[in-house]
Image 1 (cartoon, helix red, strand yellow):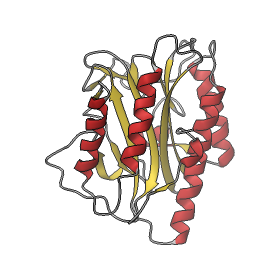
Image 2 (cartoon, helix red, strand yellow):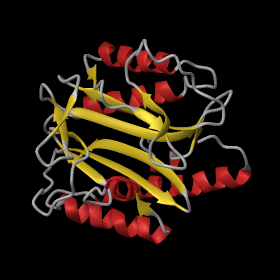
Image 3 (cartoon, rainbow, N blue to C red):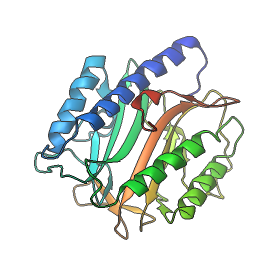
Length: 254
């Protein structure tokens, strides 16, 4: 969507506060021995307290309030009573929701407890690259240039990007124009970021895979060549200067 008045900005700020606070609290609440369903239930209570609805459930009928992916699962993991979190797991939580007709999206990967499997370097790379990408976005900038920046920064660190997962427009729906804000230079995409538009910028930084594939459960995605992936995401408003980060409350850069 494009922000055209204060009412729309306030609506987006409120929806973004709901998803950002929920993500932050879920990341803090997660602990070894907990099931991903317990963690999802905790997030559901927080979102419900805001009066917000789960975006993946409303939009796609996803079987959970939030997406929780663990270790080799890249994204869209289904919360489960059978999946028990362990010390050192690489966990990704993606929280998106609708509140009063406005939609916002954010996500974060983190190491649970001690970094016994050495995932933290990957997590840090994703965070750093997202920060650099977002602060290079202004009205008029080519979307493909930001994709090129993300892939270049990933390669510098010895990583790959996932080419079939992208950021996207958001606001009056979960996925809007521009539908594909890729993590690489898409030479066929000549679209530019527009001032006052709302977009969800996501990094998909991978150890070995360049594409994500859907597993037999119909939702969870893993790498086509295995390995691990870290994702971080903010919903922002594009301006002529520094973007307005609507989901800053999630504190993923802290």
